[in-house]
Every structure is written in structure tokens, then in C-alpha cells.
Length: 308
Length: 256
Image (cartoon, rainbow over all chains, first blue to last red; front, side):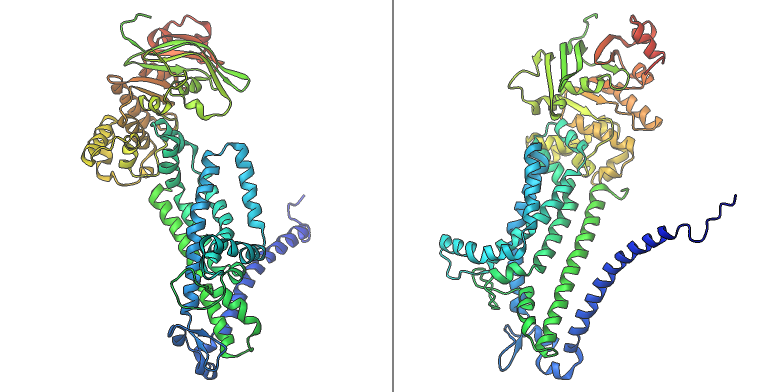
């Protein structure tokens, strides 16, 4: 009997394989198309004469006013870039210690039963729609914080930053927890065997060994924070002012796009400007992801040597 | 046992339970100072468990209970109020697989001293690192790259760095859990030479599944089976004329 297979014997196999290949490809293709679309819509600020009378790339980085709907529209990116930076920084300052601390606790110190409670709870937190969190920050948290600290402005960068921090705690926690849990048990035994206390072991052996994963987690969290929209749109007060005061209302890049793109005149200078802003955001998050990967590789090489 | 040397570790009627099962049964043996004592026996006989009982490494495992006596220099290490951290500084450990920290060679060796928190001056610490690496017979191979990651070394070199790391804390007893089983024959020979020299200063307890190794390096041998101590005597006696039939069958390779 010949071993040659009939032509259609594995037809079903091939069909299934190609179908799942298509789903994988479609994900890549759609990302590429989105990028292409944003890129195309933002380019008129470089070449379209009519658009360039109002908005140019040089103009985006001149002046300090974002006033797209006035008689003489001004499109300075500085106030909203600063807004994004302020809110992200506050979110990171709040979320990173909480997330890393919680991950260290649940991976190193928590008894098994407590750990089984913490992990699902954090996952539930990740499942809260950001609009609900924004709503909570807008109505309840802002008032609470204002009363507590006597702030003049209810919706400000700190309020938004804290709410934003809550949205990025779960992903940072989960990635850090994985990184810490995957530190080999033999490192812990070695440290304890040398007479280190459990806390010294966690701080001087486990955390440094997990550092590549932790730093990647922190950077990915930062990318998420910069890209998050709904919470900051609701909780930051949305005034695009150029000020370093974190107790003033502020507006982020994402909130600007979300708030204005719905009402903009198609094809206008404002429209293309918003797309350019989107391109900038895209570039920033892309660079953060790249940095995160390369930092991970570099730290791994430094810690574990060139052999691994 | 002729008591020419003092007994450092004194184990009497020691039991260890893992949940409901008894992993060590009524172990009684005295380990003399500055000798190498080997613990041999078939897989799962409890030899590693017994070794780890001596620095209370079993504490890390849930569901472990012990009773009976285990004394270090006359002090029961399982009594209430024992400082386990101090105990482990006195009783160092070398593990089966080389497990250097993902840090530089220098930092690996300095680790225990730093954690002890006696705030040594940098020059003093340098001396401790150098002395320990020399003692572990690895100094010449790593002196030029102390700041490189210890993970870049070969397995045998890593294991000697791990030994240096244990020596830096100035322990009195060193426990070795199959320290050469993950190494090639040449690296194994180096470790064995090292053990031979270290016994001038330290009391060494070594677990091994390699009987030739036990015969080569140890002064005394304990044979364990199914959690019981079958025979404990001078190594020369165990390997030439064991008193127990089981011991004889094991060392002649009839099972194990």
C-alpha cells in the first residue's frame, strides 16, 4: 500500500489551520490599518496649505494655549502634554508602590489562603469598567478629597491621578506577582541558609532577581496610564492650562481627543490637529513598550549573565 | 564510638512528621567535630530531610513537625525561643544544584556578612571575600572578574562560589546536600578535595547518593532507609565489614 495521502485527506486539517491563521493575521492587519489611518489623517498639517494657515507642527510646540475654537485658534500641545505627564506621574507614584508592595506580599509573605483571596480581588478590580471608576472619582472621591484637604478646585490632577492609579494597579500587580513568584525557590533557600531574615531575603534577593519583570511591568503600566481616557476625562476637570500646580484642573492628550473629536468639523485644521495628537500618543506608547522590552532584556543579561 | 573528639551535633530519638506520615523515625546519632559525616541511603529515605533538620530548613515546608532531641553544642535547637537566623549562621548549607544569586561574584560572597549587619568596612569586607574564595579554592579562577555575574561561571565554579559564600559567614558546621550531583567528574573531584581540606576547620555533614564519594570523603557514614537509621559507624568499617545485612546489600549495589 502506498503511503501517499489522497489529495483531500487532510482537507479539514488545512481548513482549520488556515482559519486560525487568518484570525492571527487579522489582528496584525487591523493594528496596521489603524496606524495607517491615523497617520494619513494627521499628515495634512505637514503639506495642506489651507490647514497649515491655522495649524503647523512648529505651531504645536510654540505658545502655551490650547484654544481650538476661538476666532484665532491656537493649538499649543504644551498644556495637554503637561497635563498627561502630571496625571501619569501622580498615578505612577501612587500605583507602583501599592502594586509592587501588594505583589511582594502575596507572593512572599501571605499564607496560601489569604493569597487565594487577594489575587481574585485584584482581578475583580481590573474588571471594573473605567467609566464606573471615573464616575466614582468625579462624584465621590473628588468631594471627599476636597473636604479632607480643603482644596480650592475639586477636579484636579491629583484626583484624576489617584483614580488613574487605581486602573493601573491590577496590571502592574499581576505582572509583578508573576515575576516574583517565578524567582526560583533555591534563591530563597540560599539566602535563608546564610542567615538572612525573611524580609532581607525578599528585599535583597527576591526583589532584585525579579527586577527585570518588575520594571517591565511598571513601564507597561505607564503606557496604560498615558493611554487611559475615560477616568481622566471625567476626573481631571478638563481645563487645558499650562501649570505645574497639581491642584489645578488639567487636561490630558487622551481626554482632549475624546472630548473634541466628536464635534470637530471634518477635514478642518482642528480635525487634523487632533489626529496628529493621536499619532503623538501612539508614538509615545510605542516607544514606552519598546523601552520596556529592551530594559527587560538588558536587566536579564546583567543579572543572569551572557550565558542565559 | 570512641569519643576522642567532641560531639558537635547530638541527635537523640528524633522524629520528623510530614503531615501524618513519619519521614524520620527515632534517629539517634552523634556527629563529631571536625570530621566529615556522610549520610547515604536510597532515594526518599529521608537523608536530605535529616540534613535539613540540622539547620531547620524544614521549617519552610508546611505541615512539618518534629519531636525528640537535636542538639548543637548541647543546645536543643528545636526548643522555644531559638533564633533560627542565628542558628543558620552557625550551620551553613550548600545545596544540590549550585544556586548563586543573580548578583556579582563579590556580592554573592559578601551577602551573608552584609545581612548579618555588622557593618564591615569595605576593606574588611574585601578581605572576607578574598579569604572565603581562597578557602573554597576558587580565588585564582575569579579574582579578575569579581564584579561579573556569578551566573556566568560553570556549574563547578558556581558550586565553589556557593561554598565560599557559606564560609564567609564563618559557620561552625557545613551541611552539604549532594553538592556534586549536578557536576561533571572533574568538578566533582575538585569539590571532594575541597571537602577534605575544609574538615580541618569545620564539621561537615554531607548527603550523597554516590557511595564511592561517601567512601572517599567521609570519616563516618550513616546509612538510612525508609526514615530509619540502619547503621552508623566509621566509614572504613561500613564499607568493609558492615554489621547490618541491609547495609551490606545496599553498598554492594543489590538495591538502591
